[in-house]
Image (cartoon, rainbow, N blue to C red; front, side):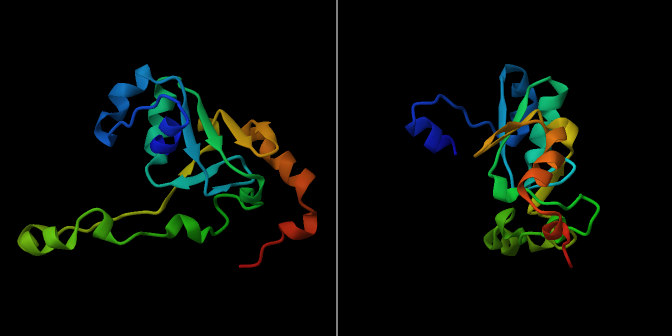
Length: 156
């Protein structure tokens, strides 16, 4: 994303995870993508976004989610979302070459590499969609405007 912003002439800086909290005081806005926007205004985002949003909240930095209307879902976070239980292979964290070289050290390590994070609605300042900008508390109303009640019934 930083490459695309830089090519468009927008100044941006990539910050490593370890320096995120220290740098957050110098940041004026956080942009996050969405995997899904839930009915309560919560957000299912790529893994690591929850840490960024919590640091932004501690420093009173607004968090803006960029998404499309088709990512709106009538589900709530407690309604059996399999998405929140998906995990990636540990290969993206520790390569197989490291695994073979340090087999004695890594034999007792359990790697947990989730695909998505759930972000609470009170941590999101604004949703920017292809039809406008909305606060998280307005998401439930958007569902009523754009989707019929019959399509809300999701069978699992």
